[in-house]
Length: 90
Image 1 (spheres, one colour):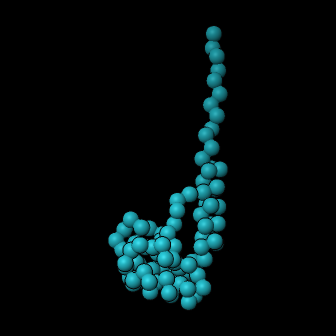
Image 2 (cartoon, rainbow, N blue to C red; image 1 turned 90 degrees about the vertical axis):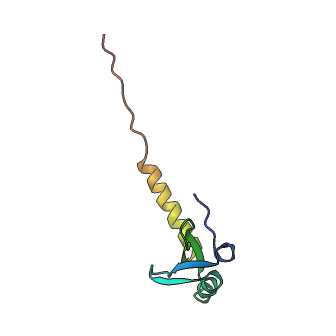
Image 3 (cartoon, one colour; image 1 turned 120 degrees about the vertical axis):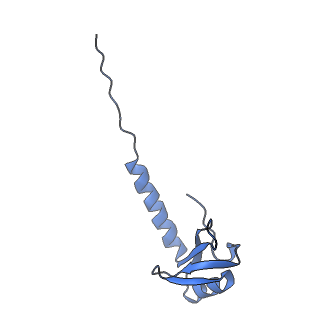
């Protein structure tokens, strides 16, 4: 499972912020976004660090982590290799 930067560990100056309902709050400084998340008693989690500005979401981190682990377990269960049986002909 990938590591997600959250709250004060987000290194970017500006971030694109999504709220807990998935609505776009726009670009703002990382400090303002962390402050906004703390006011809502949630965490600011960096979802996509590879774009400019990075995309962050205001969520409860423990619930977010649980959902990602659940999704990974489901994908792992569906990706089991099918067994091929061989037949000998003589």
